[in-house]
Length: 258
Image (spheres, helix red, strand yellow):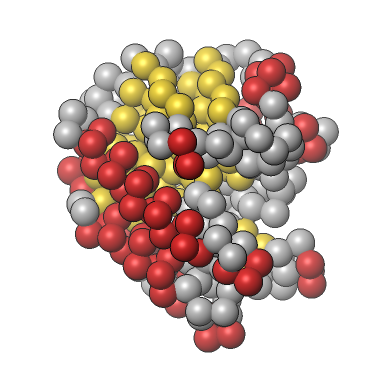
C-alpha cells in the first residue's frame, strides 16, 4: 500500500494568492497531490503561475466564456495514467469546474461545484449539475475507487455551519435541495471522510470576507474529501487546515493508504 497526502484548496484567485504565502504554505503542507478550485485565470496563466511548484505535474481547466472566473487545477508529484476535463455535457463544461485524474489504484476528481447564486437564481441548474456529476462519478467507479475533493458549495448538516437556522432554505449552499444532492452522492456509496471520522467536531473551511467572519469563526464547512466507501479502511485522517490563510477558504486534506 502507498500512503498519500492529498490537499484541496479553493484559492479564490491563483494570481492573487501567489503574491501571499501560497508557495511557502504548499511547501509546508507538502502534499503528494494538490487540487485547487477557483483559480480565476486562463489556462496559460494558471500553468505559468503553478510552474513555480516545480516538483509537480500541472493540469488546469479554465472557464471558456468568462475570464477570471471559476477554474480548477490538479498538481501531482506522480504523473497520472490519464487526465480528463469536464463532464462531457456542453451546458456543464463552460466554466472549467472539473478535472479527473486516473492513477494506478484510484480516480481523483477535483470539482468546483456551481453556487446557486444570489437569490438562488441557479438552484435549478445546480440540481441538474448534481445529478450529472453523480453520474460521472458512478461511471468512473465501475473501474476503480473514486476520491472527490473540492469546494462542493453545500453545508450538509447543521453542524457544518455556524448559523443553520438563519440560513436554512434562505441562503445558497444550505437549501434542502442542495443538501439532498449531496446526500444522494453519499447514498450512492461514498463517505464524507471528515464527518465520518469526526461526527461531532465543529470546524469550518470557508468564511465570508464581510463582517470579520473568520476572526469570529462564523463559517461554513463546504470543502470536502469524499471517497468511495471501499476506501474507508485506508483513511488515516481527514483534515481542515484552519491555520493557513490567503483565501476566504482554508485548505483541507486527506491522508490515506491505498
